[in-house]
Length: 267
Image (cartoon, rainbow, N blue to C red; front, top):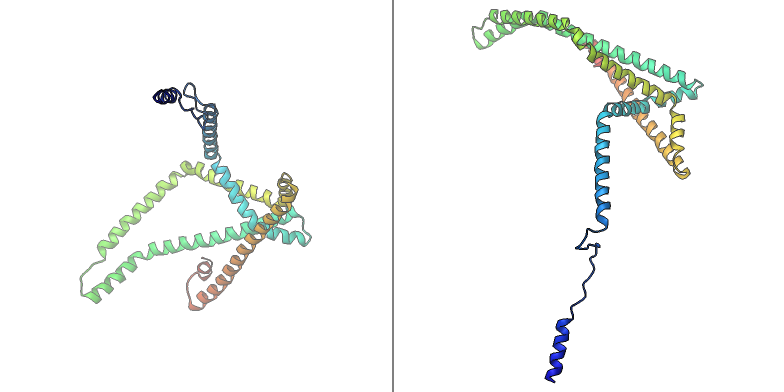
């Protein structure tokens, strides 16, 4: 019995348990098979990310112009569709809507800028009189002895400095010409893209939807047109409310004798 136990113990000692294979295929003598593929995948992903970031940085201005043009086309296209339904050609309808918007926008800017310039000019011209009246009122109310001569002299000095600064700025107009031209070029580019998106909107939507599966084309086209009509309806309702508010404010300002009632109402 002792010999049997001894032989059994020796057999147990000589027999080692079988090694379990690694779940990831890892072999201590060499790298796993998936490691080169994983390294290539990570490197390719990093390269694609850097390339996309570089392209986005270079094309950010163009993408911004496209987004602004797309939003403007959403706002303008309902009016063009309405004119087209009345029998107008789409190109002429788009041109007419653009002309009306440019005239109205230019008129608003001109009225507001003219009002601001006139108010600033009036304030500068009447500043000494206003300061003298304010000084007399303070002396009468609080029994002080403030004189307005020093304040007026200092104001005249500032006036001269402002005039000289304005002259210097006028002399440097050529240095900012490139910036002005760049802004004008961007505005022109936005208007050009917007005109194309509006005038060829239906054709462009059909061409873009043609690359989609047939069962998705109708849904995408319907959502696109719904976005156009909802955006246009929202903006036109706000413009109508603004027009009504401007007319009411104009009448009220004119009745109470406020100077420049139309400009203030538009503002």
